[in-house]
Length: 157
Image (cartoon, rainbow, N blue to C red; front, side, top):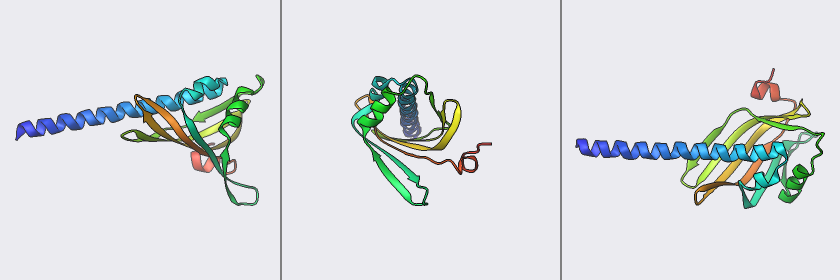
């Protein structure tokens, strides 16, 4: 009986360690994406993106209507690559909530976006990732964007 309990504990421990390792790898993938984003290094960004990636933004327009926009990935990447050196884009991730199930993961990251060191907007990124062999790749990214409720919803003073 003790042997069975020890085996179960070892299996459970190994499983939890593997999941924590995967969570660390998912976080590193998101961090690499933003390292490239901040530097304007789209090759670095693409290194953690799947070949076919979907990018969307959900927001409320001036009329109060909820809108979902599907972005052209090539246009987004080209905008980042062609950003003038005079523009500083700083997306500050406030926390990470990461879930992993086998070869699928989700990273939920509330953020603040600063443009040239001035607060612009806030929201949440939701990354969906797929483990392609040994590498996690971003397959879907959706974000929200708002200005009026940032202080209340994410604790800005």
